[in-house]
Length: 99
Image (cartoon, rainbow, N blue to C red; front, side):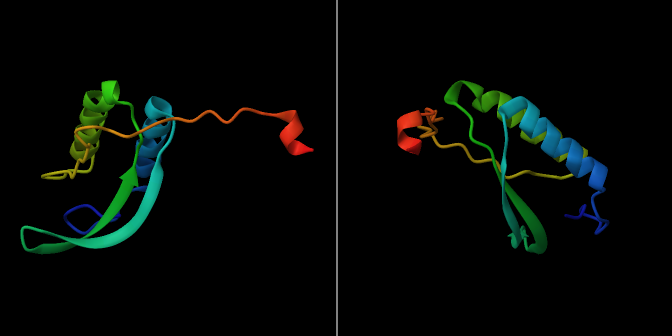
């Protein structure tokens, strides 16, 4: 991942961002690196998915904004569906299923 000026984002900065996502929201999923276009400028991009319940979307939006500030971005892509379909399914430990 690089800053807008082409310098690599420091490993410590990335570690801090990922720790914040893990601590505040329980985890994240890296979607990989790609190249995108922003106002005619082709640049590298890293997608990260974080599943949050509807009542925490505003909180997550604030975190994304703070990440954008830390990375000196002009804009950050943020997507939250109008009707989130996030569900955290607890998988019970069933001893009989293991036999």
